[in-house]
Image (tube, rainbow, N blue to C red; front, top):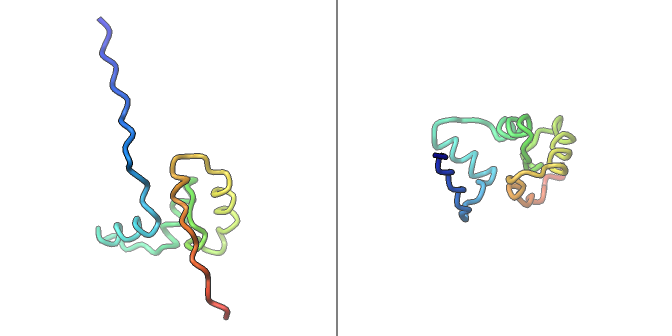
Length: 87
């Protein structure tokens, strides 16, 4: 007798958390990580990150990952707020 196949997971309306939501949750859990450290962690794992959180030395890598990313976290990208620092 063949085993009963597992049902396919139901597609729900769940969405990926935004970068800011991930950072806030980590802080609530007592994990105090700087936003640039979280951005670097995501980039090391090949995940897209909003460029406003990426350290300057990783900007080109982040642009490349964001441009080429085809996974299901692609909706993670947030609209960057304008940078009003003109110094």
